[in-house]
Image (cartoon, rainbow, N blue to C red):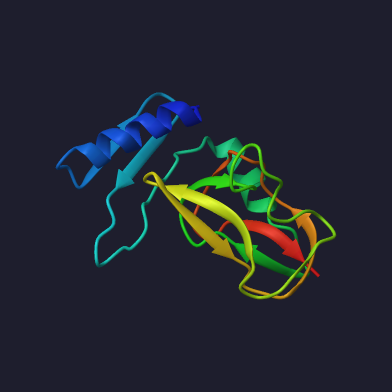
Length: 141
């Protein structure tokens, strides 16, 4: 498994080079990083997970209720900085458009707004997790 620090180094290499994309593989993982283009406005990372891990990923999104999903691939941050409180906690009420987290992609901190109004019933990812496009981040009721 490729750790987050190694992934960040790969992103830096891509940013500082004239390459449009890079792909890194080992015996267990395969990661593809691509600079945004007009055709694909987000960075694509496609881990090549072992077959046993696939059902776990598919089962992660909880059924029922509304979800706030990641609009991009990147690193999830629950707070604006390590010494500040989280944007939202379980039980907090949010309105559509309220900032609920930050996703870092290619060293850019992207504030993610709530796509629905409601009460946060579950936080589905951990601070510092790498998230994928359309991955559920929060459940709201």
